[in-house]
Image 1 (tube, rainbow over the protein chains, first blue to last red):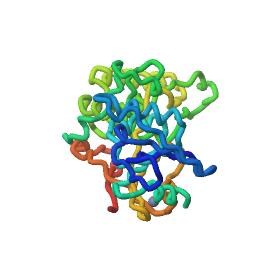
Image 2 (image 1 turned 180 degrees about the horizontal axis):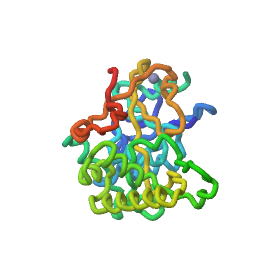
Image 3 (image 1 turned 120 degrees about the horizontal axis):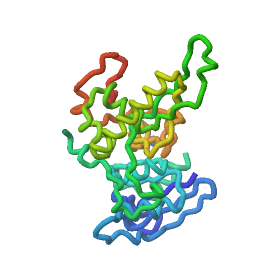
Length: 105
Length: 180
Ligand SMILES: [Zn+2]
């Protein structure tokens, strides 16, 4: 399974970024291979349309799951229509490593 | 009316996004897919009656569900589906016409297709506390995608203000009731 998380930084000790469209980094994690890829979010400073641009970016990676601190209604509807499962973690102190550990349940 | 409703999406022509619909058309929001894929006529010589089925699009099914099962007026139903009221009225009229053709001509009804997306329900995991949804409605929700825990509960959607009219059938369970 391929999961994408939003991260505040580019290492495993970084915390989950609570914003989806304007997060600092996207983390692509593959549960089968264990590979981790950090992608700087090119949309984080967009005045408008950061959410939709970020949906396009993450959708191009074909994830099964997206994990973030929040998804706006518009973004959720787009991701629903793409049949991508969403996970919301409200505890923004969670580290990326911790989320990866959970995914390896 | 809740604020939440005001945020219902319009994937409009202005959107530059191509991944949702190749033609950038407005997608109609459907909350629940129908429980069956269609209906067959019965009676004497039903075989003679099996002609081309009438295809009721998902949005047409949803229009009838909202109007005649949930008892919403066209205005509220159009908001539920994230489309304009004239569009809703057109879809609804088309739905009734198809049903009439099926009834009068004894045709099968097959439900499917159309320009829709299925809105998903949120669940709260009782193991890790995360919230998650479940986009594939053909599959049952079995576990938390994050931690794998088997126990979770649906999260109420705050949509009660528009569900004032209970249908006469009494079949409809109150949606959004949760054991939280
Ligand atoms: Zn969980």
